[in-house]
Image (cartoon, rainbow, N blue to C red; front, side, top):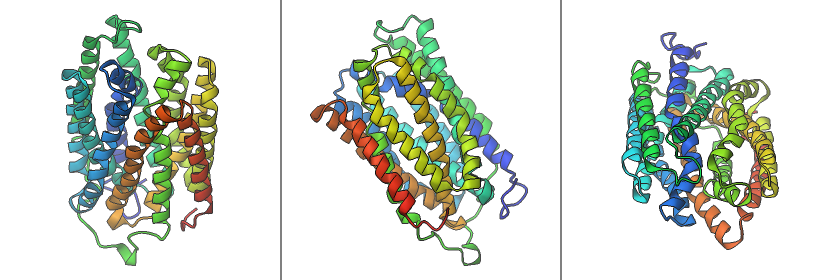
Length: 398
């Protein structure tokens, strides 16, 4: 239903539905890149630290841009930034298809960071604009699940292209297959841009805070600190997980992708339902459960020696993320005023981005200096600490 403070000209299904469709299409490369980025970096001669840089440069771009973008969306509206983000996402896929080198990867990651800053931040704010407070968790969960479905479908598509062109494990991941895959992703991103052109504006002017509504509730800075901590420790694993699994379980990356498939299905379905649950029972308890479950997975991963064990752990991790992420984003809306919602999500994304700048570099440094298992135990300890801080904090909302 429309938000009580928005006109019926902007029903939820016209906004959340279109954003979910856009998120699905532009997420096609995510699963594919997630598995191949460390491997491709290794193939072009990048050191583990340089592979970490490929992750950190994406986050650094968002750190620089998102606070500014958030403030601008409060003044100029959400729609222009959503459309610009989609266009830049498309350009990044074209770059990956054309420039196949470490520096090409680096440049495309910067473009992806720019597109992400525009599209996701404006989308978060648009969802809060049109959803009633009691339905925001469901709104965020719906879009998150759509993005996860896109990542799953895109991974199947990308590895299907590799298989069809004979670029399977042991053939060096033939560059032409990579170019074809990212060219297809480019065309899909263009389709997302075309479909989203009719998205209505949800924030046409910069309203004054309604009825003395505060810009932020007192618990908002505390939430940002917890978000920074969780993002940092989660990002510790980003550049080293696939390298670790190649060394410990199998070097066949498509086989690892198959092992991840059940978790991807969970992540594609559960966030919408978990978001609705957070609307009913409260955000913090679900976030804490998700963080603690994620810690358990990280602590157990170093002991995984079979694909079956790995699959079970990934399913548990997907369930944990499905509980935590929609509730976390709904909390940002709950603790910010309507007139400053874009800025609130800008600061939220700044906290996430800073974590994802520091985390990959810290993870690769631990991996090289203290051993392959060190990043996993650091991740588990950090998530437990974040859950404890969350449950003990006074956020002014449940």
